[in-house]
Image (tube, rainbow, N blue to C red; front, side, top):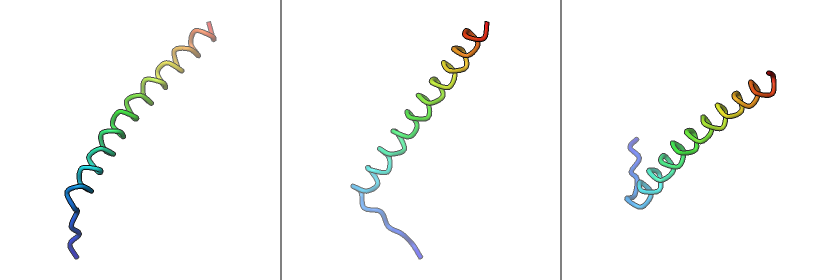
Length: 43
């Protein structure tokens, strides 16, 4: 069975992929900041 995606839906999926990429990058930065903060507090 083949699923067809309408062009508008394809654009929405690309938007979601872009948002997800930026979200994961931001999450990575927050995790790094949190680890650094814990190191500072520990010392």
